Length: 264
Length: 355
Image 1: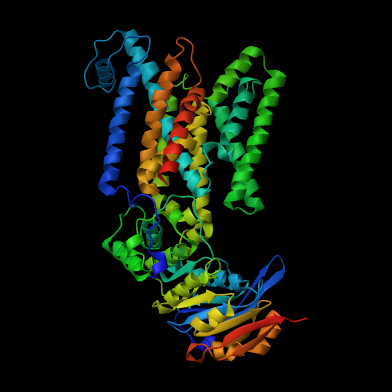
Image 2: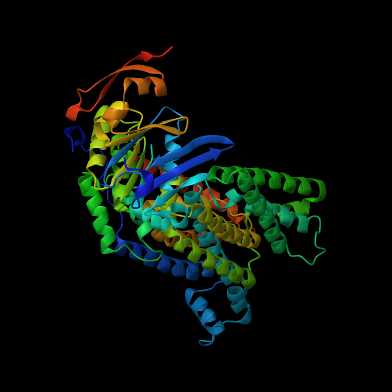
C-alpha cells in the first residue's frame, strides 16, 4: 500500500478518527487503496470496520482527520456528486416495496438524474450493462421478494454498478450467503473495473480475493499489506485471540488459515 | 452463472410493469373518470338535476353562456352540490397522496396522513372552539382545527428530532401525539359538552363534507396543488428510500432535508383537509396500496394516479353518504371504511395470490 500522503487520486482516509458518545470507535486510521485494487478490511467484532466504511462512504463524518476523493474532502462535495463516483453495498438489504430486479438496478441511476427528466439513453445503457456484467440480464423482470440471499446481493452489486462508480464499498457482503455464493460474489467484485474496499470476517476469503488487507483492532490499524505478509499466526493470535496454523497452500501461494482453537 | 442458479422458481412472468405510454393512458383514464364522476355525482340527490343542467350552470357562472334553470335549482348546483363534490375530490386526492408519500418516506405500509398526529390535534382544536368557546366566537371551527393540527405536528417534529430523528421515531412520536390529543378531546367533550354538542363534534370527528363552501374548496385545492408539485419533484428521491435511509443517502439523497420538506408539506395539506372536512379515514391508508398494484412502485407515476383514484373514490363515497339514508346523512368517514375494508381485503387477497 502506498503512503497515504502521496496518493492524490481516488478515495483515501487520512488519519480519520470517530468518537461516538465519548467512546473512540476509530483512531487515526489511514487507508489509500490503489486504483483498481481490492482492499479487505479485517478485524474482530467492534473493531471499527463498519464505521470505517461509513466514513469512507460519507454517511458519517470523522471527528478528526479527513476522507478525500481526488484530494477534495467528502464533506465539501454535494451528496449527488459523491454518489456518482462511489457506490455502497450493505450487509443486507431489505424492502417492503414490490420491486423487480430491473427496478432495483435503476435506483443506481438516481444520482445521475434530475427531477422531472425522464430516463436518458445513458441511463438505460448503464442499467443494461450492469445487468449483463452481473449475469442478471435474464432475470431483469424477477421480483426482489422471490430472490435468494445470494441473488439479492448480486442485484445490489448491479445497482451499485449502474451508478457507474470508480470506488465500490462493501460492508461484509458475504455474511448471510452460503459458501458457493460467497466465492461467486467476491470473484465478481475482484473482476470489476473499480477500486473495491470490502469489510470481511472470513480471513481465508480475504486471503483468496484481496490484493491488500488492513487489520483493525480496537479502532486502530494493527497491520496492513499483502495478505501473505499480514496474515500470520502471531497476528491472528494477537488480534483475534485464536490459535491458527497458516500455510501457503492457497492458489498463487496465498495463505490459508486453519483455526486450532481459542487462546486461554 | 452457475447451474445452481438456473431453475427459475419465480412466479408469473414478471416485468409486467406499465411502460410510459401505459402510464399516460392510466392518467388520462383517471382524469376522464374524475370529470365524469363529478358531473354525474352532482345530479344525484332529491332535486331532479341532469348532467346537462350541471354543465349549463357551470358555464353560466364562468360567463360562458346562460342557464335557464330556476335560481333555486341553480343554487342547489352552484352553492351546495358543486362545492361539496369538488371538496370530496380534493380531499380524496390529497389524503391519498399524503398516504402514499408517508408510506414510502417512513417505510411503513400502515402509515396514513394521520400518523403524524395531525387529525388528533385538529379535533382537539375544533373541540376547544365548539365546546369551550375558545376564541370567543371570532375563531371558526376550521381555524381552531388548523391551529390544533399545527401544534400537534410541531410536537411530533420536536419529539422525533430531540430523540434522534429516524423514521421509526417519527412514527412513535406520531402515535404519542395521537394518544395525547385524543385523550384531551375526550376529556373536553365528556366534561363540558351537552348531548347535542357532543353529537355535532362526533359527526365532525368522523369526517363530513356537509358544510363545504367555496372557500374550503379553494383553500384545499391550493394546498393540494402546492403539495402535489413538491411531492412529484421528490418522486425519484422517494423511490430511493425503498431500501432505507442509509441506502438513500448512499444514492446521493439529502435524507434530513427530504424528510423535513415532505413531512411539512404532507402535514400542512392534511391539516387543511382535516380542518375543512374532518378526519376522513381509510382513503389515505388504502388507496395508495390499491394504486401501487396498478402503476408499480415508481412515485412519478404512482402519485398522480393515486390522486385521481382517491378523488374518484371519495366523490362516490360522499354521494352515497348523503343519499343512502336520505334525508339523514351518514358521516363520510364511516362509509369510506364500510365500503373500503371489503374492497381492501379483495385487493390484498388478489395480490397475495398473484405472488
